[in-house]
Image (cartoon, rainbow, N blue to C red):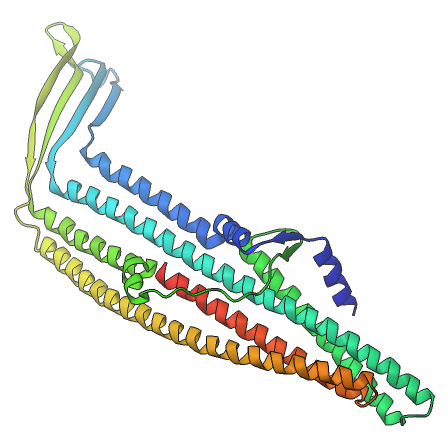
Length: 406
């Protein structure tokens, strides 16, 4: 009972957290969400790097050499200096242009990947939250159950002392009480451990409790197959990834095109003119055309490899779409079945509640025994726990449906 007491004290002094706040906190703090943001920033730098290929390239070099008297003979200057300032500008390079397009597509892909990651984080947060609400409800039910069995033990003990019931009845009441305590202790520990997992998922330090109740989530009637193809983030990632691989083929094909660059150089170097040593300076400018006539079929091999990668990605895309469609259909079937179970459990709850009411009335008039009332209470609580568990599964299935079609 010490663990349960610590659990109840921790809950009393914890910060309340709603489902919406939990989702917001997960998107902000969860490791997967933070890493996806860093990956997006990395692709932005990749675009800047690709664009560098069409910007002017400026280089400068300088060197100084001093020769010993044994080497500097005749008209050779003892001190030599040379420098060069060069500017190169790409006029046409298809490989660079295609590389920029590829980098832009990769950024768009990473944006979709981040969206997919955030949707998965949101789903996992809801799954955690609904599970904790269910376990919290179980603790409350078992607390109420414990109070009933404590009352039963007190009454049985009084009857035993009065000689009304045998000792075996007292022992049975004691065993039932201890079982109720153990069940409550176990449920409290299970809730605490799940809460620690949730806090680790949120990367949250400190005490935490949930605010809200486990209620049935509404499912609107929509064309979910159509929504899946239009909005499913996993399919959109696979689709964009296919575009990236198609562009990669174009990048490899760009090797067949020539490149044209302009350059301008201003340079100076030490030279001997007559009896004087002078620094001669001047500039040059021109154009440079490069075209690789033959590279041992390396270009053909690169293009073939890129096309094979594209074919592989096409297969992955088909597989992803089929998998997501199958997941949607199974989720809809789960929702339908769980909805039916919930309706049946609601009727069972009404029946169990009425049975409890009748048993209580019968006990009040001395017709029923305390044990009959306790059995009715136990049956009602068990049905209620089953209802909450089914409701947890139903809400999780709805969250999965939102994950697939939003």
